[in-house]
Image 1: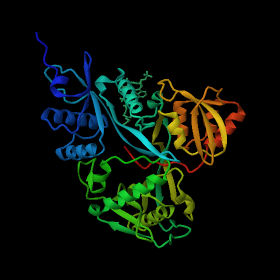
Image 2: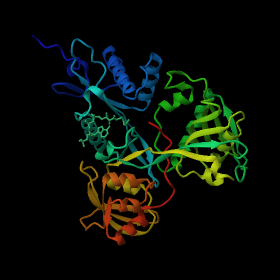
Image 3: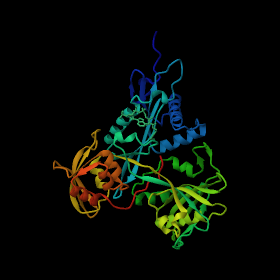
Image 4: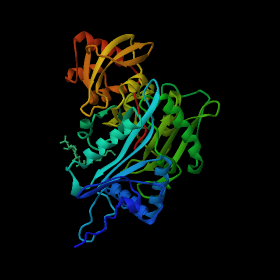
Length: 441
Ligand SMILES: CC(C)(COP(=O)(O)OP(=O)(O)OC[C@H]1O[C@@H](n2cnc3c(N)ncnc32)[C@H](O)[C@@H]1OP(=O)(O)O)[C@@H](O)C(=O)NCCC(=O)NCCS
């Protein structure tokens, strides 16, 4: 019997980077190709993502919003499609993988970051090495594109270490009582003000604040395009217009935006809650002023929010117990790909010269380098000198943004060297500010 034509025949459809095995076709989709066949595959890819993350099937409006955002980001989407069986259509892939390139604030410089996202494998195809294959080739593509580090956020905690990613920033969930017990030691009085802004007018303010925040905040990564339609009132979860969302912008004494908060009112039980969806500030004063604004919302007793793990709000309160941390989770995972570029982009905290050996089973960051640090910056160069300190690339990712210091990692047996070398390495690598990433992707 003649075999059915392969619907992914690269000659007919012009798929990018196609590879066909007995059971699967791997391909990258061209988001600018509007042919019906390609549109069906892109829609299938999107269905697979939503299925993988347990969301509803997309409606037409969602598809359009998603495609516009993915195009704006120049996102690259790749998948694996199974050979059709029993006459079923196979537009929905069994594995998905995506990336986009933005920037990350590494503390001393902002450098390109390869943001991996939309990693899913269908339950019918788990544990056969599909994700390993897509991840391995994707990291090779990042190296070929000269991007010094890859980042992701993980829904599970034990998967990505094996590919060299380390959890590098954390995020708190806080519940803040806004009864009369909420009082700042000093009410912000720097001539700034908070304005409630209609969602149709908020985006230019939000964009400016985030750009300032990103430039100043170690651990911040650029925001994907879907943030824009979300701020403008599109609810990605409900797949419709969001009529509950409110936005307030903080303006400094000169009228320049230096903070914003996106929130909605909720009444999950007997307590009315201000549920903060996003709070970003570019100055410490704006952060406190936005919290004062949230506390001043009447007919609500608590504010819930994601917050930096080290949050100066705690120390600005008269009674710090009104701010209760309800959870702390890892957030941004970092995978160093280029040792020299990455290590030169981060700050160093003592003047010293030390040889670091990094082990990387995938090879990308494997090497021995000398860190020559002075005045907060370092030059990094390959060396054949004996290492003072040795660690693997996952541990380097965890250490990279300064959320974790050298000592606990050494005590856990993950950094080796003499006591003296470890003490010098800690003096070099450990230092504030603590990182924070407010971007979710
Ligand atoms: C994508 C996913 C389903 C795994 O896909 P998969 O094709 O079954 O994974 P593979 O078969 O390629 O496994 C690769 C390795 O990861 C391990 N692994 C896979 N899923 C794991 C899990 N949930 N927990 C722990 N280890 C896991 C495998 O044991 C294997 O290890 P080994 O090669 O060292 O033996 C899984 O990672 C997942 O559910 N991810 C949730 C989505 C997510 O976190 N996305 C984050 C970026 S958006």
